[in-house]
Amino acid sequence: MPRNSIIEDIFDMTTNAPWWVGVVIAVILWIVGLVVDASTPNNAPTAAFHMLGRYFLNLVACVVLVAAAVSAVKKLLRRRLLDRQDGLPSLRALSWREFEQLVGEAYRRQGYDVEETGGGGADGGIDLILRGHGETVLVQCKQWRAQQVGVDKVRELFGVMTAEGGNRAILVTSGSFTNDAQSFKVGKPLILVDGPALAAMVRDFRTPSARTTPPPFPSARPEPRTLLSETSPTCPKCGAPMVLRTARRGANAGNQFYGCTRYPDCKGIRYI
Image (cartoon, rainbow, N blue to C red):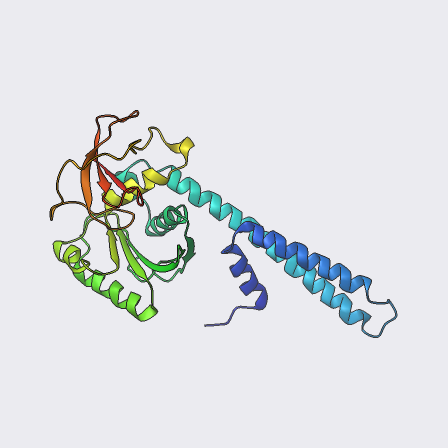
């Protein structure tokens, strides 16, 4: 496989960085070029060399500016991709690439720096690396509409997480997980996010202008309505058990929902 040129490497790194990083780098390169040109006498023996150096810096600055524009467009498209989702059917209609981008944007809005590895493809692999909140999290995405994700995939992800030294691993699917898969993750730093949990996460982190109704967060901490059981769902944000609650105040007063047992530290919810 041929190696990329320096210009290609710079372009790739800048497109994966925030757009303003590219703008700052381009300005710095342009200023350095001006300083080099101004400090070199026209009759100096190295004048031609310095001129070529300035041309190269200007070229790199232009490449970085184009990459910054690409980065800004990518960010906008990912934001729109998440905001236009309106439920599980729309999530399952995404392509596997769009699904990975959507999951990355959902975690980006939770304060993580998201690296899209591009190595997963339609069949598997580590698709995202999350960094933030004092941890490194490996994420694998499975855009499986009908087939359940089995325990073998969860074991593989746990092995990769252990080998790579990640703090946690998350397996996200638009479908569901087998009972064996759910059992395997107990007591391990693994989070399994199924289709309904992902749909709830997307609803929670849509921009306010994209929401049709406010999320049913209670204005005061309600008491659990039921005890935890083996059939209780897990939190889509932290993986902790959830309990059935009833909102006491606000527009959603009287509505039931599953709330995270770590509330108020974690405000994960599942709609009923």
